[in-house]
Length: 250
Image (cartoon, rainbow, N blue to C red):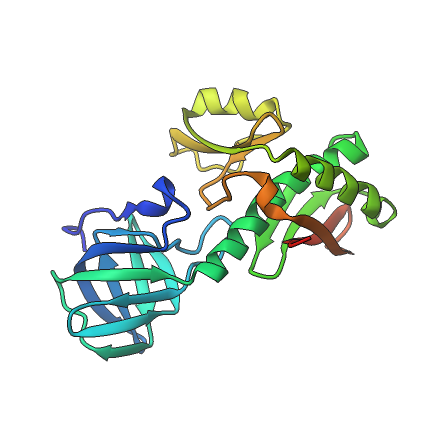
């Protein structure tokens, strides 16, 4: 494994890439699954609260349904439990992303960034985001709050909808850590949960609205979100409020 180079991450260059060509570097078997390592990939691996992509890879003599994608150090492992024919080392394959799944995840991920700012504007007092997550159907934020958000649901939705209508672009920036720390402070964010070993930071910014460190996939502009609907809230313990929501077509 040490001799296999790191996987080039095509989704960093273009989150809208649905099909791509790649060379098979290694094929492994583990716990009933076949793992395929490619020299580059558009498949997003599980991480940062975002689930992995799904889809398929197809070679000259076989195809594999990709049911999970995971990091293996600096390499990405495409896992399959359904291979027809054979996928061989050194061959060129075509990878295809399950686009409906990916696009739903992209929209909900960007919606989570936008909702962090919408909540701040409504509450107008400091809080900390202590957890987050998303899937195809919804996203969530866990916030340090003493009181329920339910009385201000409509106000939060109204602020979020107003921002969506501005259709601001979503920009990706790579910064040195010290520069990034100062930059995200302007948006009431920090890098304290980011491992100290990371010196170059990927910043996702909804232009002049919100910015934070993030390795996930996002839409190009927030107008793509349609509307943001709050689904509910729950208490996750003393002083922690969980808010669930989703981006959906108008």
